[in-house]
Image (cartoon, rainbow, N blue to C red):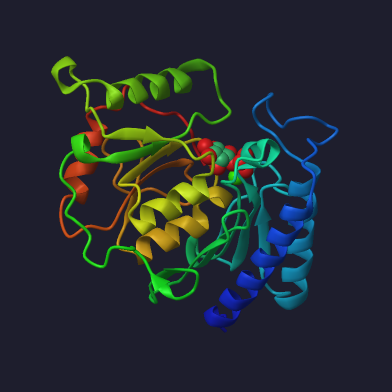
Length: 290
Ligand code: IPD
Ligand code: CA
């Protein structure tokens, strides 16, 4: 029997709000075991406590559904055909540690590797982004996305506000591709660059997706994130008319756990042309895989 998506949505909203209370009342303490990968890949006791709370609560209410969360993930675990809750208890952990208020809980129900319910809640800014497949997406449950009811057509990168993230991988060929691409995006057109209006990095992949869905950002280019960072945001964006493709030139089909994502806002024209133009500035291939 297929799940009642509205019921799942309502529970995920409650759970995300409760997670928000936990986050606001916590003192960020980087976990005793230290960081996951290096000094920039942080995990706090709160990330783990919030995920534990979410997993336990969802298991009690929906015992037939699986769980795929950042803190309890075992390497090699894959999304499959069965319904699964995909959870990032705190997206923007470095922001949380520093008190920079771009922090959220990101929750999705994924069936057959496609998100069907998505909820993102930022307790610091009290903003809630939600979507149910086929029913549009909303901020604060009532305001539809995108925020402009008649979004402008996309034209060129020269008129675009673009998000990129530095991520936690700061070595090797992937880092080279990223930093050369960032420079190409910023550089003057006369010198071969795209000269975007500007680059932004909020430090939360989920909130970047929400900002593209709302229309505040035109595009977000991300290599190295995981399904828990993007599942809710992907649905919220696509319900707002946006698209997700690969970071790498020619990749029109991105996958939820493929780790490479380019999100483009909803627009009456120009999405594919902007993607093609962007790919022309990607300085190599990002080598991240499911
Ligand atoms: C990170 C953030 C960041 C993105 C990284 C993620 P975390 O998640 O979403 O924006 O660039 O790839 O790992 O560590 O804050 O949960
Ligand atoms: Ca995350």
